[in-house]
Image (tube, rainbow, N blue to C red; front, side):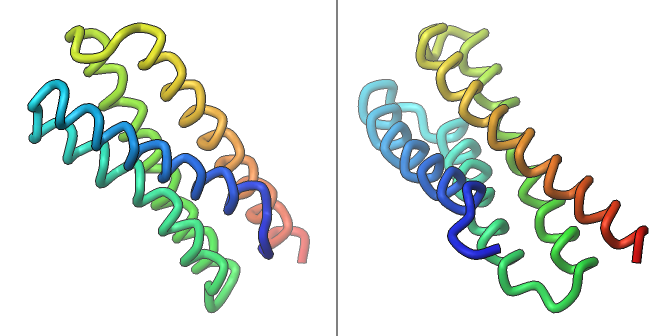
Length: 120
């Protein structure tokens, strides 16, 4: 998994999350929920990067599975922020769409890797 699309997209998403966190915490003065999406949103890319150095196919799947869970959690936090009017629908929808795209890519990689393990 060299500089693949999932590595790039997960890193770019983490940058977006950090920048959004900086603005959100200053403008809204909200620190509890913002720490939640900061942790889960940046963890996605960290786990994708860890998967690059997996010791086995099962370890690779495990690390990507953690990234998948963190991605889904991030979607949850942004849905919550949107529904409670902490962020606008446009902001929420944009971040949710980015996270959903990333989630689909990660899930696809996991499914494909599992299939390849089964065919060996």
